[in-house]
Length: 579
Image 1: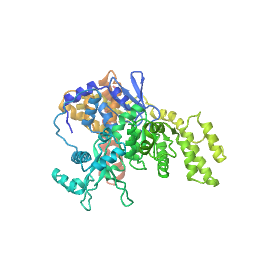
Image 2: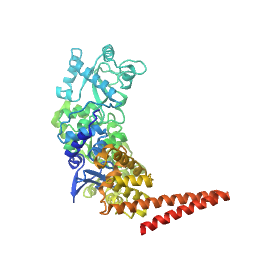
Image 3: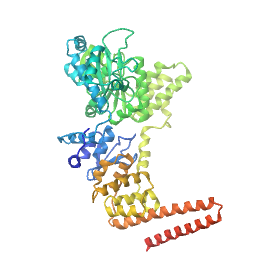
Image 4: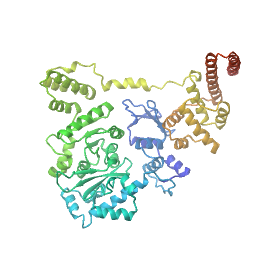
């Protein structure tokens, strides 16, 4: 992983506009000097993220996320700081001359191992031994472009693989870790199979899904490495830009479904490699900030999976629709039998989740049973109230009435998504900065605000108080002290690049967004005095507690004197401030 010089980082930051970068992930609207947008880091329905082009920072006033352009990329892409610098440079059209790596990811060796096996399998697909697999690819209409894009290869027999592993020098532990060898037998996991690599969100190889060409009930059609399950979304790193450009992401079940859609020119497809969408996969989809078009198989398992996804997506506030493909097969089979145009038209035929529920729950339940019919109507109507627009509801509730005989349109006490924005506006309203005596946390934040621009203020606070009570303030202060140890002045943007803790990044963005009073020295003196007052107050409370807990008269007398000294010190400090 490359390590960049401070000068390189500074140049990339100077030539990267945070508004341009964030606009590629979130729709922003100009409000005065700043831009507002839906925060991608929590379930936000009312724009709560502010982006400042002048200060080159972003800040969410609900969840507290904040930082500069590198912080944003790190958080939304789940990548390292050097990767964020590289990504920002690419977005700005900067050709970075990557320095020699001085640090390596702990996963780098595993990535190298898997990539070498991928290259090996791709070579074998074009070899004489891979001719049967290549013929299969031709029958499945897998063009050379598709094979190259998805890095599809052919895993030969176990003896070939054993020689390859020995030649590369990959040890047994590494091969088991990467899922290439069976831990129990030491034999290759993938033999005589078409190999489709699986990557993490950043594009690093982490495993495979492999399809057999041999039919047979005793042979599983697909074999997956353990790393492909649970937390990964197939094709995510490739589909991400296409999804944002298309304004949608198509969610399919398996890798071949995604490849089938890609053959039809539909590049914004991903798969959760199975039917159950995990919370981690759901979060990755949410971060794309585009509606999800659920295109699962139309069989019973696929429709059940669409139902389960819909329930989770509805609860998470993720916009989605369901592709209406009743009576059709999976995407790749549709492409094979009916061609690209028909598959493209199928993708465009979508229905709302309430419309999907209207049929699905009727099929899986018993509407002849009064109680089941009531539960059916309640579940369908709740989804309708939450997801349908006002003008859609009358016609839909008429359909539901035809199904049940009940008029669920009168149940308007069901909470709706549309009632949330006003509630969230109250939640995110930014109060004006209160007087520093209203709380130690605010006083500490005020001290830090001055410390960002004053080395002498940082030195004075460290000498006279020395610590911060609030955890985020304490963490940020350590970074500030460290910066002043190395230089006379402090650059808040460079400070962002060093901070790893999200709460400290959010606090720094908040402090940078505040206006420092003209008389900064008086503001600092007042804030410092307020912190000292709180510290002395806590010490007095502690002494009072010890006085109550002891029965020793001498100890009580000594503690009383200690308390008196503290009271006098606080009184003198207050008089100096008032004077």
